[in-house]
Image 1 (tube, rainbow, N blue to C red):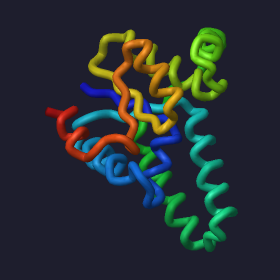
Image 2: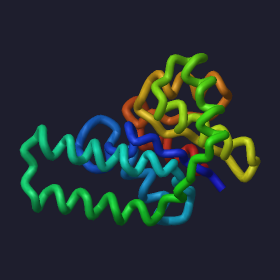
Image 3: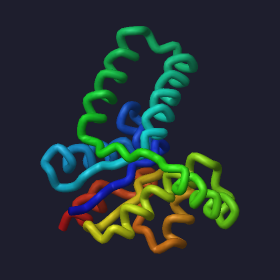
Length: 160
């Protein structure tokens, strides 16, 4: 099984046409076909809702357009394996803040992705559009995918 930890910086590209959106759509198509599994920490849920709400406010999005995007997000959430956070994981994430100068939420996302990788239950990829987080993941030998800097063929290659 191939696991994809979805950092909200990349996941949100599923809901607006911007660089990386096509790659995120290709990943979701693969998830729908059962070719991989998406996972994320619960904090990613609230982060993503916050970004969607911020877009709504900044772009003057009408209520119906927002409801459509939010409905799609909630549908997508049904395909995600949600990870809880323990106090031990929070404490462990502090080392990533210090080592890589990550913000607290990115450090938590990295911690969860690395823990999944350490289980040995398949290949794990961190999907993020945050360059600092991607560099940190790579420094920790975690495969990473930045949808802004790859093409759909990259997704196809991952699945062989």
